[in-house]
Image (cartoon, rainbow, N blue to C red; front, side):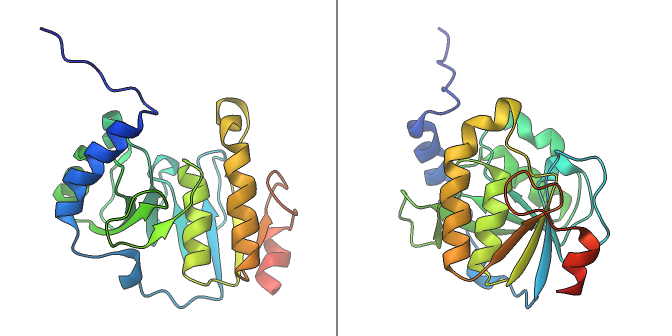
Length: 196
């Protein structure tokens, strides 16, 4: 008998993963101590990212960062996990992801999507890891962020509606968001952003 493969966007899959992952929670994003005026947020939409720290990135970006952020719930995503470090993970990720991070010696800080209540910080992130970086920077009250390589074009254009909500929410909370390429928000060069 064949086991049904869960649909990628199936909310039942999210809930199953959250049930398993909720038993692994030792730290949440409330435990992150990052006192920064600025942060560079990087996605894999660019090969080159400026040298600036603190830096958040998706693991697919394949650069050293202070915080790796993912909400991806595909078990195949484990192939992108190659660095020891701090990870901010959503409860909906496939349980193979925290297992691999633990094997690498990484530390996990958990959060929940806004629609699941497990007593963790809840964040709206528009089903996208790059957008989750923005939501986390806002949650951590970082005043200025620069987006580098976070693009919602091609296959990622499905996340545009979520981006609007994430960006508006972050700006309402006082985070000013700029983009090195002007794709999602006002363009500002890295040099000018560093002067802020």
